[in-house]
Amino acid sequence: MDHSKQRLLLSLLVEFSNAFSKQINESAINQKMEHYIKDTVRGFVEKQYRGTIFDKEFKKMVEEVNDARDKNLVFNYYTEKLWKEITQLSQKTTSFSNAYSIIDILGKNKDAFF
Image (cartoon, rainbow, N blue to C red; front, side):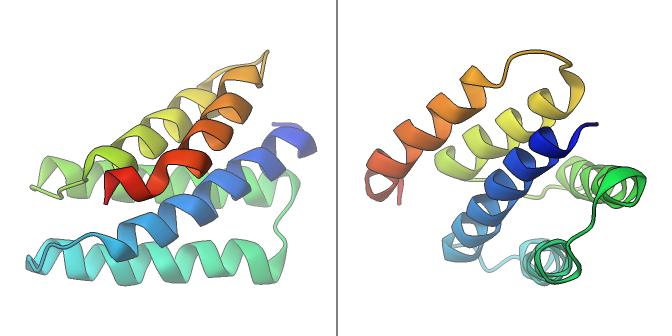
């Protein structure tokens, strides 16, 4: 995927990681995934992945999170909306307007979801 799309996804991933960390759920799978998500997103930010390396690492993260969701990983309303947008955007090849809109909307209203 192109660099602008990767940057947008990274912005969404950072917000998703922060939101997921604030969820109140003490289940073992949520705690394990909180560490995984936080570490993985931190890696994206610190290592500044680009190009095919970003694509490969991103795909791996999506598979890991979706696998955990199949094993009862729980999202609240806000993290669910973010994750849905992340996965949909990663599959699209055109407009980013929906993702920018959701960043704006969720950014303004995120306190209402916690």
